[in-house]
Structures are given as C-alpha cells and as structure tokens.
Image 1 (cartoon, helix red, strand yellow):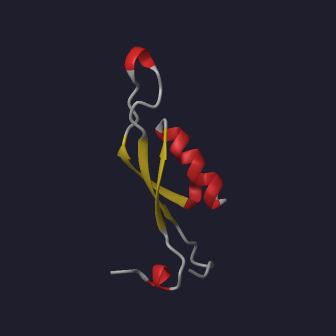
Image 2 (cartoon, rainbow, N blue to C red; image 1 turned 90 degrees about the vertical axis):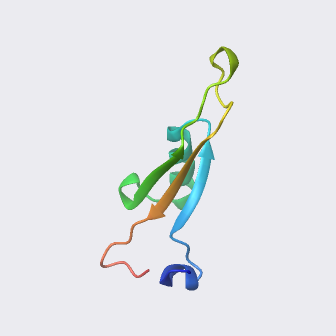
Length: 74
C-alpha cells in the first residue's frame, strides 16, 4: 500500500548504497538536496572491507525517509 505522498508521485522513502554508511548518507543527501536533520536514516547493512582491508567488498545500504515539517506540504 502506498502512502499519500507516494500516490502523489513523491516517494518519501528511498534506499541508497555506498562503500560505507557515511558514504551512502552523503550520496542520499546530495541526491535529495536536504540536510541530515530532514531525514530519518535506517541502516540496512554495514559495509564490509575486503581482503587486506580494501573498501567496498560489501556495500553499505541505508533506507532514508524524508521528514516533512508541519508547514511543508507533502
């Protein structure tokens, strides 16, 4: 079931990946053009380093929900 925002074509929840959780958050913030205070972040998987400590063997994955202010129309 879609919430009211999704029905209007404005999804409020998206998933992002990065080599680290912080990288995934930065990607989300850049794409959504909002500050960190305007989103809720749920960590789905933490990134894991590969052989010899190399980054990116397993990407970090997060779910981001955009928070709306009471004054902001959804």
